[in-house]
Length: 480
Ligand code: TXE
Image (cartoon, rainbow, N blue to C red; front, side):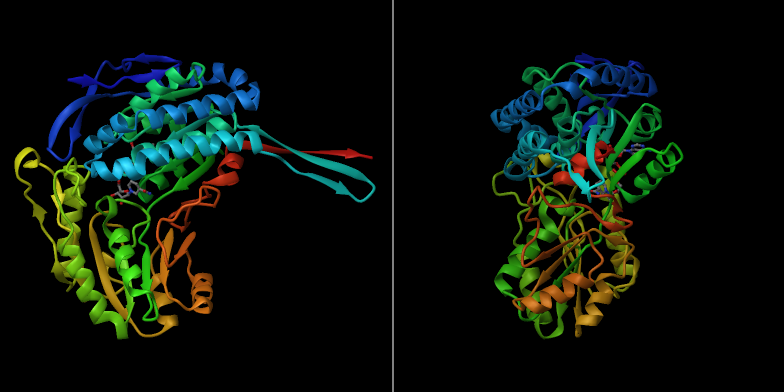
């Protein structure tokens, strides 16, 4: 069985413990490879490597740094078939999605920040005739990057690309549920000529090796994407150590449909924003609010289209809904469907585990599920389910739907459907979320700030925000 290895100081090595954890193919429900069970000793070795590499990497001419990263992006493009297969097998997502979204975006992340390194600039301020101030931004040192399982290589590269571009060296940990593409990526780093120690990739359990990364005193900035509960633990460890932290956490995003929308576009896109990647995206719009005059028609059409989604083997070209990432996650999603029923919700379609025939008979598949009849304040509508489950609720007034939309502890993204521009501005201004999409969803420009309000996180990624996060700012004031 294939053994994944840690990438420490330019070498592929076994974990210090000598122990391995099972890695599942969730579409088959079978173990297909082994992951290092790393611990604090591996973090210490990786951090030593990263510290040694820091001087050389941070002082390398930016054009050279940029060229290595560009080469790395080209290697991802070259290996798109292999990486897409690996991503699909590790996470259960449709191969077609990995090939059209995850892996191309991983290459874009690296290429985007390869160019950002060259264009990164700082300001100067002239203080009347008295003084000139200039600002410098130097890499913080060794950064810790921890990523989740839903968009594995996409989110892994989204963190490490700006860190490396800013001149930091990195100790990174992908999710133990989906480690394979990060491992293949570490092999590409070697091929691209990334100097040893610049990126170190450790595999293993969050509370063990992940926690050791957060606790290491010489890892001075932490960039994390994952669940809100884990984010709070990370903040509790990092805050007394006065580390810089960037947290991208959960969401319970509203999708608001006004009667004056482009209905066809709203329906098509709402199906995607509900069920893409089995609903395992923090940006999915899991609470759909529809203006009452459109409600019955929208619900009927939405349910019809949901029923038409093909669930099955992620490797089949026609599959739209693959398997959930793990048995534990499937149980969590199914338990929320039970909760929705207990809270008085009516299931219009879905609600059960799907038995797929053949190779995927043991896989963790759940039908896309549509629930109506729930109050916006019930638990089903307040807690992140992170699966193929959406609720639909009617509303009458603008003020009412804004209140519903803002009623959760989360504030990551919101989607708004209307052809009335003034209304779009008015509602966008009142929504408490870091991102508002009007008449679209997941339309991303990598230069824009990305992140959430309230319990959806701290800080913003994307564009210069991420480059600034991985740097320390200094102002030099010179009297004229
Ligand atoms: O994620 P965790 P889990 C949400 C979603 C999901 C829930 C729990 O609702 O059901 O979170 O998912 C590492 N110190 N999201 O438990 O634990 C872990 O190894 C350091 C939303 O699978 O947050 C992995 O690499 N690291 C989300 C990463 O944290 C620790 C995406 C994320 O895992 C750690 C995923 C610790 N103490 C889940 N404990 C999004 N925002 O997109 C765990 N980790």
